[in-house]
Image (tube, rainbow, N blue to C red; front, side):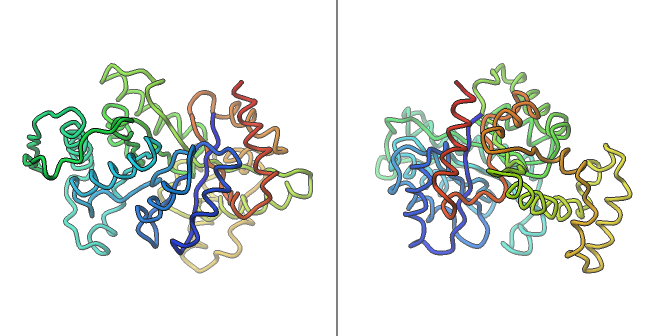
Length: 341
């Protein structure tokens, strides 16, 4: 289990130094989410200001981008970084596609699958010189002349990770993609039943091994150097659980532990502007279900105990190593590396 992190910045001028700091601390990967800014511009700055760390969009929105355009962007980032780029793809929900991007919402699971196969066909043409003739329900791409062919990569095509919660997309990822980005709000049980099980069915369908696939997940961790720091972090995590628990989609996670009444109270507060008091509904027992608690050096083994062999990379909620004490985060990275050895 390797330790990775997110990077959230608002200005391209503010990326280079944090990237260098995160790499120096020893993190496995840097992921940039698509929120307020175009992630690929930030990722380009990351590529040329790092030497070892992997990087990519945690989730780049698929449907607003044409497959050929994204294929070129990814190829350039892979070339610039000598193979350290990872393409993470997700669909977003119907409302954002229709109302924020003005797109037609159509068969998202089938379209995402075809999108990935289309990009892989484009990359195969560039890497191996195969004829480009992709014919699908949503995309028909069959023109590639030497003038527009960027040529093969010494490092080979970049891996594609899928971010999803729908079991169909989870299974599809296991069948045709290279990795999976899990949603951060989960229990070990819900991850095993709703995500990892589906991914493994996809792997089996394609005759692939679990070792050929990477699963990453943000995890909730209550940690610190001493009891006081742990207590402070516990309250931050308590608030995060309350925030997520107020969403109808996560009702089943509370029901599985006989916490239906808590979920109903959180839902009521979300509909009546009670955000500031949601944390009061989250007990220490609930925190232990959704998170692990310990000193820095204890965290890797606690996560292994909780998740078993489900996860290959983890990202820690509230982790902003570029803003924190480098030695503290380096200690945590070393703890993960030592746990692997």
